[in-house]
Amino acid sequence: MRKFTTLNESINFGGHDIDDKRIIYKDNDFFFIYDGYAVSPGHLLIITNGNEPTFFDLSDAKKHKLINMIEKGKELIEKEHKPDGYNIGMNCGLSAGQTVMQFHCHIIPRYTGDVENPRGGVRHSVVGKGYY
Image: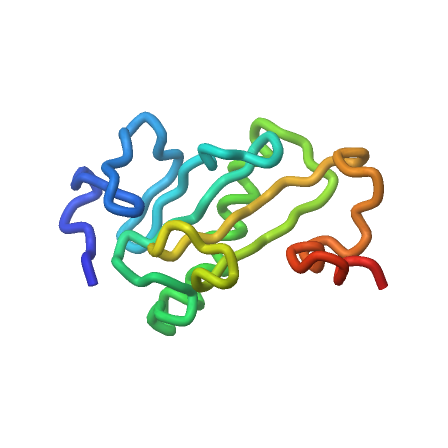
């Protein structure tokens, strides 16, 4: 697993170097960028600095640290945005919709009225299963 030797080391996501200007937070385990295909204002990604493809491949230490990273991401979002709720999600594997095989967690701010009826939330990732 790749670890930063310094916080100034080149950072990449899915094999592509990330311009330092896009990085909104970094430490020795994770870095944050705003999603290039954001579904709402403030949508950010928490990305491993290693080569673990999914959440299930992270070390136990990184899995536990992720909770704090989600809180940090929320804090950063709320410096510029005022969401009414959040979806937090991870796509683990091709069949789950993962397109970049490097672990990343989406923090998606939600705003009242951004969809007609938000009931079901992430359950809508499988067509017809969101309504119950």
